[in-house]
Image 1: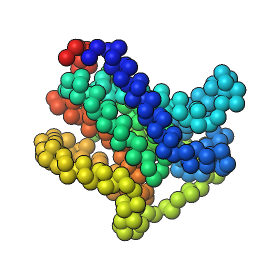
Image 2: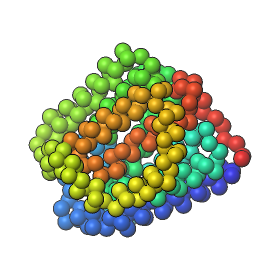
Image 3: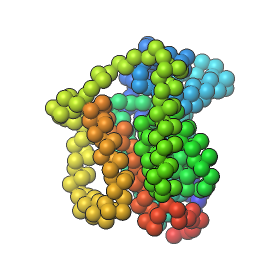
Length: 311
């Protein structure tokens, strides 16, 4: 499959993803029209924790402003549609370029399956910035893999921290152990996300209050949220179908990548206490990490960006 065909494939997939998200979550889009949830965030007000994902939300804000210049009166849902289309296309392209261990057809099949599953990861908590946040995660990895400059690496981590500080903390530890391979780099890797979170919480959004319960441990332990989300049953069915492959992957990579598995376990525990474990979109940032590790088994420091070839 030649590059132009790949581009067309990803464009079609991006149209599907953006439209499916908008159609699935019409109620959420209508909620914005009456409650101005994101408009308050755009004005640097609003409730926690959504405003802490300020970078992709500001991109959405200025995209909407630009769209209104081209089409005066362009509605909010059109801006979200365009935003998700652009983000989805870029996400699929970067996944494709990073998946160097697979042939072109397998990489495209992965993107197709991911696009279908992605919609259901948003079922209980639609966020129009989810795809863009995932794109920031992927681009952060691209920067780390393509350059050796520590200053640029930390700049990318800072951008990620303004997208999601908790995810930046995970990626920072990953960067220290996988890219720099030196625990000394844990200091800036951990400090930057924490400082950005303090900046957002104390100075940029000092009046923000959480609209969710601060502790969700007992709710998660009761299993209500897992039963409520239909994606739980689909993921369980996929787990049964691909159990052998999942088991082989874990057994093959556990010893070499204990840090990554440990990060996932720690992140899951954090969500179990403070979030809802059925909000599967929260786990999406780990897809790029496992994707990169899987496609570069010899180690990230020897990563080679392979040129595209015709299968």
